[in-house]
Length: 153
Image (cartoon, rainbow, N blue to C red; front, side, top):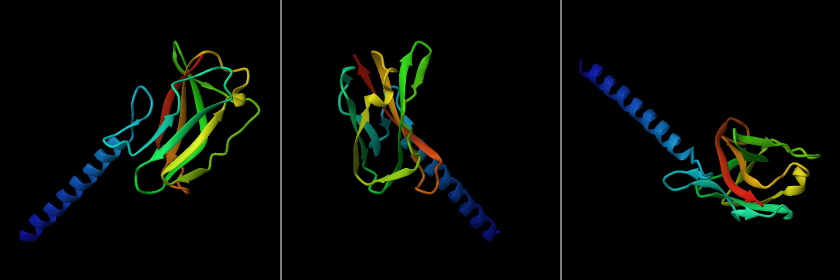
């Protein structure tokens, strides 16, 4: 009887541990409605340097900030979307392709989204830049979409 009670106690503790780790994971992977990863401590997030850019600008500058204390694997293939009446619409790049291999980011990655990659496709409006974060350099399962918004005028 004592062994059975101990076994049940161990099983309950395992379920509690698994349940807590899943809950924590969900908290760390919540993307808020205004763009940007929201969590208790914003462990990793995308930050666009300016709120507004001109259609005459050559690039949108951004940083991916990693406060996890470890390596975060991000696919640095940008997904650009424009807000429309029916929701977010993908803006396809012209004459350029992106590699889908994840890069390890230690503390911070600074980059530029070149606007001429989307020549002829950009109009004034609200845009959202997205990058996929994956489990590791070998496992490409998307765990989080890092996102932030900006305006083109």
